[in-house]
Length: 112
Length: 173
Image 1 (tube, rainbow over the protein chains, first blue to last red):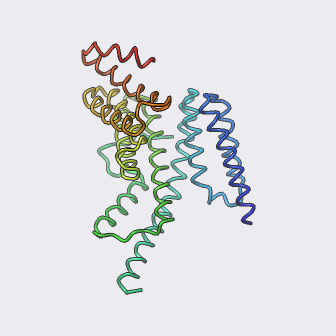
Image 2 (cartoon, rainbow over the protein chains, first blue to last red):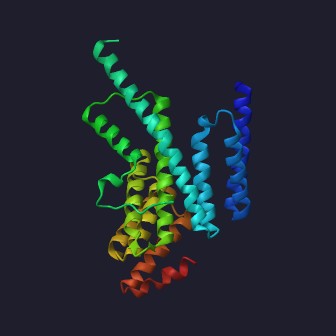
Image 3 (tube, one colour):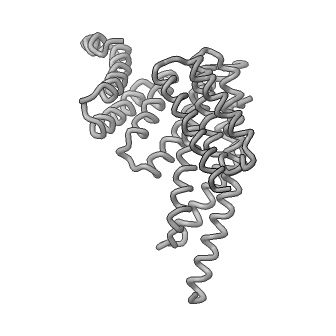
């Protein structure tokens, strides 16, 4: 299971690196294709939820690339989906963070 | 589809921002607060950076749209960039090159809104941070510094300071 997780992470890293390199070389169409591959790859994973930050980053990068290619409408679609991802996951995590803070404080107060 | 936020309407704030705000207020109100465990703290920082990244792109798209149905989107863009810049400043510190990049975006929006003097002040801050962080050496550092100086020169010329033409020429754009 851990091996599968590492394999997937490595594959995602390679795809991301390819996309970034293409973007730096200003090969926008190619970068867009690599980001699309990356997004599809993440979405096809069983534990997609654990890669949500990478997915959101890919959506933002896709939005930037599409904007640079002159397609503002498409760029807006990608940034909207990135925003949705961030909102969904961050709200859950911030709630759990507040719960942790509360637990730590309670432990401190009760002497544990 | 992105919607322009009404600046006067507090309910237009996103849920995330409200949660951030609440959590920050709670943390500050505790005084000497309890530190979060390191992995959670790191995760929170990464998420804040991601949030800022999303906001900056959102603002950039608002600037690209300019105005729609008679509504000027620059003010919304300015507010979004401002929030993102202050988030980056909180997380990375005031001297980070990422803060300089956000300030550069903020200056651009102010210039588009016609607030040239304000834009100039913001660019000056961005330039100071950028040169302190990366110096003038190296292609990337030079490109970023030249970009900010070019924008400053454009504003100076608008403000009637024509001797800044030489900066426009030197920045090579």
